[in-house]
Amino acid sequence: MPYLSPALNVMIAAARKAGRKLIRDYGEIENLQISMKGPADFVSTADRRTEDMLLEELQRARPHYSFVTEERPAIEGPDKTHRFIIDPIDGTTNFLHGIPHFAISIGLEREGQLVSGVIFNPVTDEMYVAEKGQGAYLNDKRLRVAARTKLNEVIVATGIPFLGRPGHETFAGELAAIMGATAGVRRFGAASLDLAYVAAGRFDGYWERGLHPWDVAAGILLVKEAGGVVTDLDGGAQALEGGHILAANEALHPQILKLLKGAAKS
Image 1 (cartoon, rainbow, N blue to C red):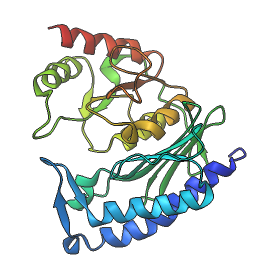
Image 2: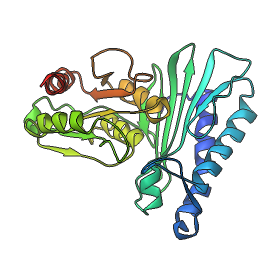
Image 3: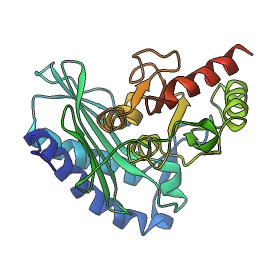
Image 4: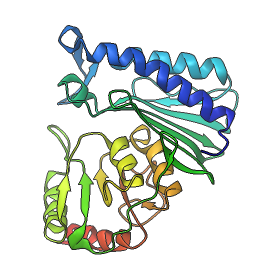
């Protein structure tokens, strides 16, 4: 693995420290105190504790940076050129049901550009990291997106709008279009890991609506550094802030985007 920037080393260390405590919480799921902040959108004591720990570690190392997190208002630091984007537990519902598919996700922006990303699943000990211009890695192994080019051979991941969220009819049309053209569709429940799996070549593509920057920041950089293409569902550059995303390799991306656009018009 090439040289890691000081900032990325800080992010990795913070994710590992928070991950160790998260594993202990995961082993005692039945004892967690759970509150409900919206339909089918749970936040646990572990979620809040993990975010606190990540903030403490990152602020200690980079006290002047700004922060955007899932569980609290944005923190505006004196340094307006750097911003951490944090999801303490992406896949909270999986976590609370004892499903070992969730991750800590940390992205770092510099002057509006994603420059570093970390996605860590503490259960599997899979640490995905990327730096702008330096490639994407899984536990020191270089990642590349899959090379498949034919839709009928690919597996595409997605997220399903849950109870209380709009977009069910739109999703049903998109799902029908993708199902009719590909080898299969998967829904695993953690956007950051869906993107990490695209970067690793496990999934050939991924699309979803109704997302937030903390869901996708680190994953966007991972896919791009693994040689993939990431856009919003209009084919534009608003995947981070726009709330919807498509990631795939260069050959598949326009094919999947055409299917999704066609479904939206029907």
